[in-house]
Figure (cartoon, rainbow, N blue to C red):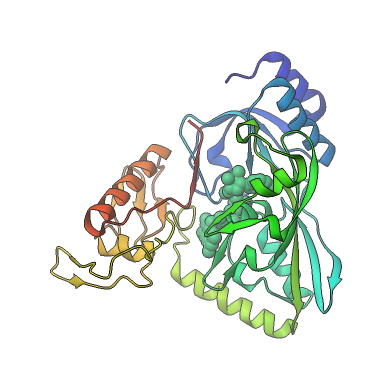
Length: 343
Ligand SMILES: Cc1cc2nc3c(=O)[nH]c(=O)nc-3n(C[C@H](O)[C@H](O)[C@H](O)COP(=O)(O)OP(=O)(O)OC[C@H]3O[C@@H](n4cnc5c(N)ncnc54)[C@H](O)[C@@H]3O)c2cc1C
């Protein structure tokens, strides 16, 4: 899709300097790869965002919502249509209510998750500790059901406000949010707001999320936060661009009790309970494996790092090699956790 001159003029007319053309997405993703977006916009007001979404529908333009870009691999030819970043204006965090002893905090989609964690600690509110150290924005974290071994967004999220591709807005309560492992399905919630929305007519935009947190001792929260952040630092590569865990941990429930594998080094495995994607990649002998500028991290085998000016193609080739090798050795098909977009 090319953006015609009229559509460009229309965007510049109300966004001014907040619209760029052919903007390299490598500047806006934590992996530091990705070709240009035809158009890249950073709306500063809610009205501007609504205008963009409504205009895209009227003019038949495609758009993609980008949060912190910390879970995204944008391909080398970039994004056709409009990349919309919400970080500039959607970044307020406020206490908006109470439920019994619990406190409701509303965080706008463009706020960083780190700021929500800090807000909770400073106000003596527990529940966000699982999110400590996860980069990116509230909107991205909600869509990814981001989490750790300590919990995930589904444990604290009470409701979300969304903007539909039709321009309608509405609140989706928890019972209509279908969470899965690193995934949120909001289709049911969208239907609840607006009837049946065809999937191919654009992406619903999370505007904000309401979090239900419980009062706790600020000193204790602060100490726990420091410990968790320290542990994360020790386990993850910090010296090269990456997008966190590249693959989801596999669902091992379907694997037969008879499962057994003998590795090249003679090691015999008969049980896979609790085995993570990183452990499988490690056992497959892929730690440190490199294609072009992309490398399997030596520190954490489920991290693909951009060691040396990698292209998206380098990263995708390495990811495919990992997937094929793990499938061949363990008969387990790893699924990517990182979202792959663009052309
Ligand atoms: C060093 C590192 C460590 C990480 N550790 C963890 C971890 O421990 N646990 C974990 O779960 N993840 C982890 N991640 C991955 C990533 O940080 C999370 O998935 C994060 O929540 C993504 O947020 P984001 O704003 O960067 O989303 P993006 O990567 O920008 O987008 C992710 C998806 O959400 C969609 N999206 C973003 N904002 C909105 C919105 N407002 N409305 C609708 N859709 C939206 C995008 O279209 C895309 O499909 C890590 C990443 C890095 C780089």
